[in-house]
Length: 221
Ligand SMILES: [Zn+2]
Image 1: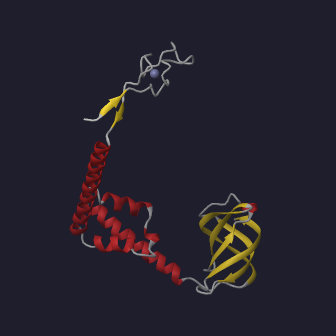
Image 2: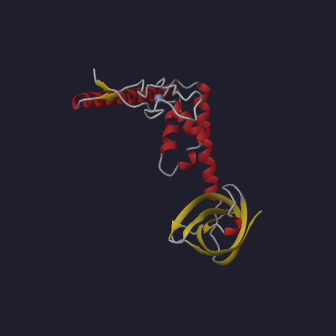
Image 3: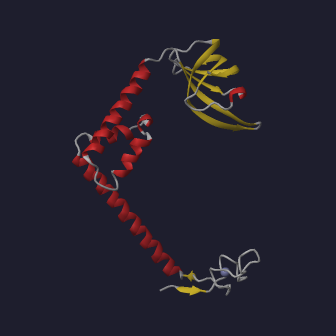
């Protein structure tokens, strides 16, 4: 058993009360200034023992979660493949709120047939939609052009002068543009439709993806 040491009340700091409180007296220590929960003083050996116990508890929990997951993956046909697909590199578009929720539940308890089916269907759909979008891509034009489309992602970038918001715009014609969000439409959010004039340079490794420079005439549409 670890030793304990008296400590000052964590609410009143040992004063026993404060002028702003009704009746002055501190309810945590009843005015004594001594905290009802003493400080625990452990020897290095006790500290090590506790750390070991915590590690064992953590390991046991992890093992249990893995066993639960394995049991779920064995119980539902197609679930293992769906999990592998969702975790595969480049398939981040599968990791939606719904998907990650089911993936976490699968480590905690038995999934119902309905949940498993919904997950498999969801992953199939995400893969298919993504593929269709990829196939619909066209090479980006070059030079000074007007672009219009949806904001797919956004990222704040910091530099010496402050910060700028970079967005990935999916143009309606089927190409992507990485460009600074014009300050005029700073309020625009992911999912909003915007238009602007930019100078486009398609990237070397992906002609359907262009870098936009000197954006002007930003507008939310
Ligand atoms: Zn107190």
